Image (cartoon, rainbow, N blue to C red):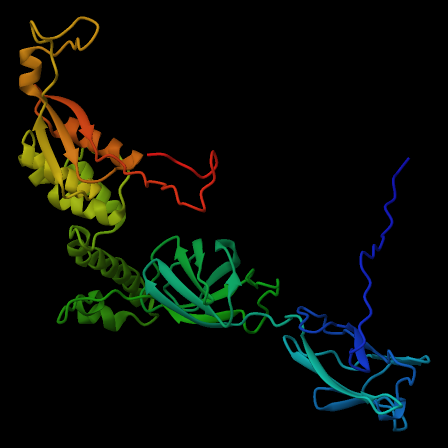
Length: 442
């Protein structure tokens, strides 16, 4: 048998308050400061006199914005711009329902003001407001190509979009067709779209937002769902002029009455311009400070970086610049200290020979201070490392990996020493500490 749960109201405490203002405004729908109210909502409210006099209907007026929507002392009481409204009155309650003939504007803030009094002269003048839902579609306001493969599309409000939400159309020829591979949305309504191939320089394109929505699910609609832009032309050194059309013999250009030859040369010119742009970008690719992340990783592979732990892009740039010096200092105490400072950021690094406690003949007692020490050869090549602060688990793993890679092959890394963590002393305070509870003898 199915179970049915009925709503219930439990009253835990009831108090009589004598100084409540008369009259009172209750049961407001929409409520004060309510958000996402439907556009075609009606306004309902109740005026209650908690005394015995009752509400003076003739002195009651309700304003919606600057409009007098209800006037109890006029005929008709309700403004004709509100239809299907209802007014009901009892001995102590006046209920008013207003249904606007036209819906509210999207995202409008409606202000309701209620003016009334009781029959024995107690007045009320109160106002409140509510926020209408967002039904305004986002508008595509601008589009700009920032590189051969990147286009930035701007909307007038924050949106949610993916690569499938954009389509590109060519509006001039010759021009290669474009498609979106990826899209990154920023909070200010700007979407960065990654293209599948380099766009034709100076060609005219149009981007169409086919599935772009704001936070309330409103989709971009024509004619504010599209915008045109010009294909990105990479910067070139001043004075360069490599125009294939001007290199052709004049008689070939004169014989091109249909323009087919010029359009074919324009296709070749696009390829030449893109190749030159790639050549111009090489100085930024092999520059450690400007190279893209993929090329920084390729540099580390080419240098034979032996470090497998994860590093940020900035740390990888620094490592690529210092890796050759690390190789030169490999097997030295200076090289180990510099590498620890680089990867962990600890300046106070000390490398010490390993001095182990051993068995002293005639002094050590069996079962008391018997310590079996290492051999002379092991002690000669063993060392410990002391650092100036307590390390994290990740930092300890990095330090051990760095030392194992840079130490001489015949040496032995025995121990990593860190300063002991100082625990705060909980003193016993007379008059406050309790025996066996807050008392600590030290």
